[in-house]
Amino acid sequence: MAYPGHYIHAEMVHNGAAISYVYASKSEDDTGTAVVNLVLQKGDKVWVKHGNDPNGIAQLEGYYSAFSGFLIQPM
Image 1: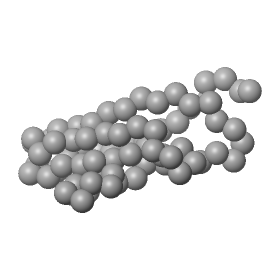
Image 2 (image 1 turned 90 degrees about the horizontal axis):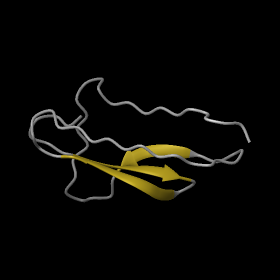
Image 3 (image 1 turned 90 degrees about the vertical axis):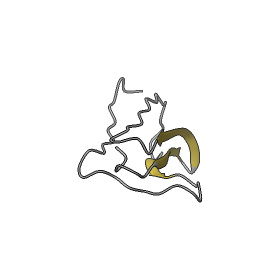
């Protein structure tokens, strides 16, 4: 969730490669959402980071940011 007057660019990254992008605008309490399904191998890494936009400002509103993952089916 973006803090009013600021915006957020974020990337979901899998093993160093961006796989999804999220943007939340300067509108009051705007949010960005992404859903990604991946087939992962043991040792794979997935994370969320601030996007590489030089004009982006990482402003997260309090405790309203979340990232979660679920095992759908074991391989």
